[in-house]
Length: 415
Ligand SMILES: [Zn+2]
Ligand SMILES: [Zn+2]
Image (cartoon, rainbow, N blue to C red):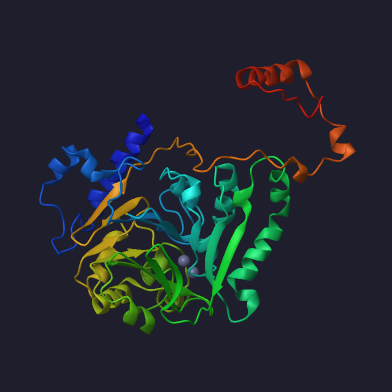
């Protein structure tokens, strides 16, 4: 890691300590036994900070990484909604892929080939805004498999996931046109599964011992859902966005980790974000879940660890959010920040912060790269070609260098 990254890790550690979330245990023993000074000195740093790509996942272990925990508008500290679930059988899943989360995902140092499954809770931009970047950018960053997408239907077809993805492909026709003949573009294909938004606890995914079900959510319009992933006796529940509802209350009971939105208190929406009071009440309690409502939901469902997200989690907001959650819930709790990592086994739930390498490069592809299909290249017009200044005395030596190293015989397109 660079020194800047070590600094980021140290900051993350301090934030985690100051943040006051339940550290490392889910049995109600909030906080660490060790005093703060000992924790900060980090005798065993590897236990307190998660370093991506250095720590094997146990065969029976689930790792959940918060890649977007903030409000709809991303900010440097918190991207919009995105959660990564990694399982000990090698499978990986993204739940929502909101604006700003792609760089957090990159910081996890996972080869793009291994992240090909995205589940949308609903089609708000703060839950899907980084999909184009991940989808098309991923083709250059070595994803060589189609991107698989699951998302809900809407009240009518044009409000459904399939329609949105069809239009997204049309929206990016220029981008796709630039890539087809130049790179191995297999990762540009989309494999979209739209499921009924009103299906209750029905299986939408079942592969390799992993079962994912959807339940309806109440948020925005018809066509919002929450998810339940079960594998190896572990149960992960993710609300995406919803106000408290009977489906979540019934079907997520006893989850090992339950991630549910916990929006800013309405009064802070007025004082900090400039909402009109009625607007704040509507958004903060009727469109989203207030901290008090979140606490009530968790008291009813009793997960091993309750995780609240979807608010600006700062030194001066967290105490107020915590105070309000604690009016209605006294169980194990984490208030999420980006890069928070949860290792879930039947015995323990560990909560740490992930170190961040700000100079991350793409991992090598898992599959062999094919040469580009140059027949798919769309040629420039004679007009554009007429503008090229080829600088052969500069460009030819660059070709000569590569040809010599790799024993090839390539020539510049523009001469
Ligand atoms: Zn939403
Ligand atoms: Zn949202």
